[in-house]
Structure formats: C-alpha cells, structure tokens
Length: 52
Image 1 (cartoon, rainbow, N blue to C red):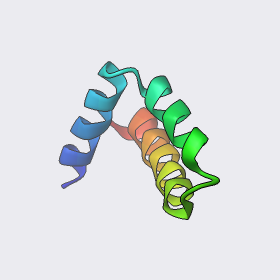
Image 2 (cartoon, one colour):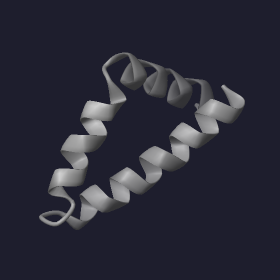
Image 3 (cartoon, helix red, strand yellow):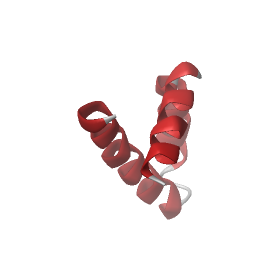
Image 4 (cartoon, one colour):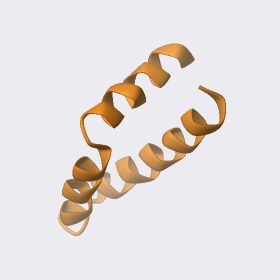
C-alpha cells in the first residue's frame, strides 16, 4: 500500500505538482475539502521525500 502511495506522488511530481497545488490553493476558499486534501498532499509528499 505504501509503495502504491509513493508511486502516486512520483506520478504527480512528473505532472508538475506545483501546477496542481496552485489549482488547489485557488479553490480552498470555495471547498473546505480542498484544504484538507492539500494538507494530506503535503504530508504525503514530505513522507515520500524522506522515505521513498
């Protein structure tokens, strides 16, 4: 399962993660779930950087 998550973040990284984060940041005020998603995205990305 963890390897699967790592693969997702590698794919996101190749799809310009910065663009995705920018898009999510624009919609945080309109959708509280976007804020939660962004939090877990950064949390997962930090884990990927340190362990994957």
